[in-house]
Length: 109
Image (cartoon, rainbow, N blue to C red; front, side, top):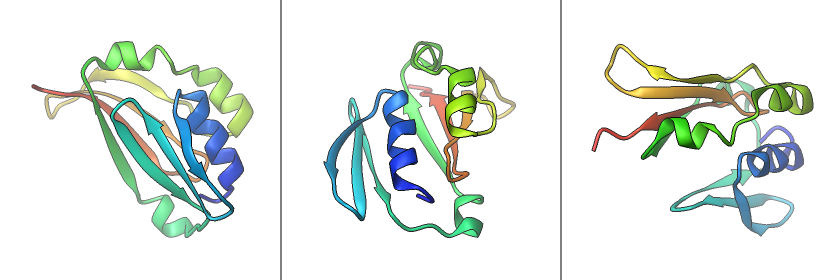
């Protein structure tokens, strides 16, 4: 995370809960999914990193996303709501404050 406090607030705005936090790492969890934010930033890596979150219903998950608020509060690129992609999955796209691209994709099973 370029700014670990801002990243934590960003993910909390999406419904994630911090499970552990200190000056160097923050564990974030939402339902059965979790990841660790690290107080370490490499621009080239962050802007070339993509994380895929598989959900049962992309539209229902996306209902938690207030794109305008995320842009206003965190200065991120505007999220793109879920739509069917050429590769056969319904996917929504959002960028976190460090530039990491998230694919929120509906599972095929």
